[in-house]
Length: 113
Length: 153
Image 1 (cartoon, each protein chain N blue to C red):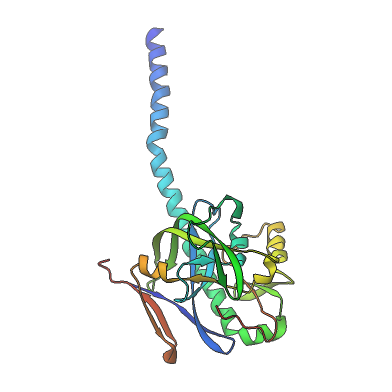
Image 2: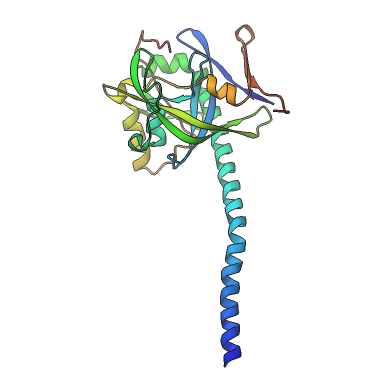
């Protein structure tokens, strides 16, 4: 009986130790996964930004003063403000990781930083 | 190692931008953001539009001891600090590059609605270029722009 109890205790503590030993590996894999997602988002966002820049003159004429969202190299949303755009994506539970969102300035207003 | 920069035309003239993601304790979901490369700015700074996109809680951030209010794009902003930040960019080989910074500035208008400033981009300033050990190359005639760093650094 005593031996059986000892084995149970040992098995239990072994399980905890195993979990503790696995934890750094799990964290390492999670970090790797997070970095893969970050890299994919960065590359997709860049493609959308390049597409937006190539079509800038056309987009400005059409959507002056509005906020435009680009995903998969096409316009997926046009709203009056950035807040409205972000709210809509939030309601749709859409991840904005790779979406390029830009607010077009009103005609004849340029920004010098 | 080179980090390509995007040359594009806005307001009939060229500007250079780069896509980067910032990871910091107050950013729950790091997102790619567009930064205008601006050697006229002392700091890398997040404009209000990107503060909203990344959902940074302004009230949780501390103000610096120096240069609390700044003038930017003709408006006055409070400057807050995002501590222990890492900036992620993509190099010419398509790999991710990480640059650790002690702080990233976060801008919020001192008055007016934040919507009024949604056109203003975030900027990649001199602190990033210096701390990252980069050289900035910009050849507007040939539409070439990149940040370069020797592998030894």
